[in-house]
Length: 268
Image (cartoon, rainbow, N blue to C red; front, side):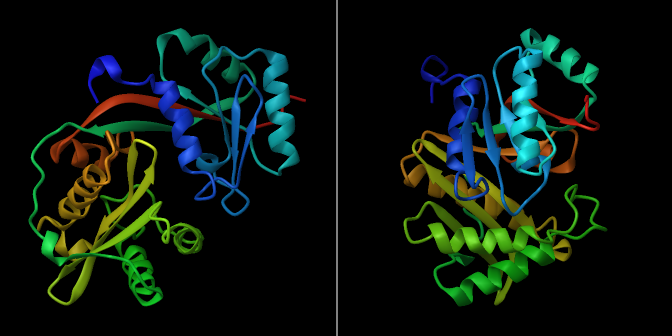
């Protein structure tokens, strides 16, 4: 997408929330000044947050906090990391919020797609394929892995499985396995929504690192996204971690970052 036609970063984040509806978010609650994304199964700050583009006031924060508290969730405020929203950070700090994460939004930069290992990459089409995907995905994410800032997947595996059952038939979610010989060694996911191809769940087994399988799993999703007619091919990493640098090396560039501030104690 050319810079002149590029949607605003906030408009992109709004669309991303809708992309995740019934995938990770079970509900989106419009408060006019913010949109709350809520997950029934995952209590983490990533999936229970209020997206805003405004300098919220005390009353608006009270309303957000009341709603998320009623859902038995901590309050996280999510917004683009921009200079004109600096006063929002100040207000949140006063109200006992701390920065819990910073998403780095990276977009494919129209580089050359490396098709190595494409012939050994297959789409998950059956329950048997899904079982192999889940097992491989789990094996790719270990707590003792220096390249993995996320730790073990735990409950997220069940969420991943349930989401595939809901959306694979309509091609909204596509899961992929990349093989080395007969052995699955890497995984990736492409979510299709309007003009966006969102890439996630990329991982490779520790023992095949450096052989190009993680890159292949990612580039396969980019190629698929292009073939699906999307104009934006993107992913999110956490600022300052290994995956951030990895995706820069294989053709992605940073467009913007977004902050998550989570309340650590009640102000009441």
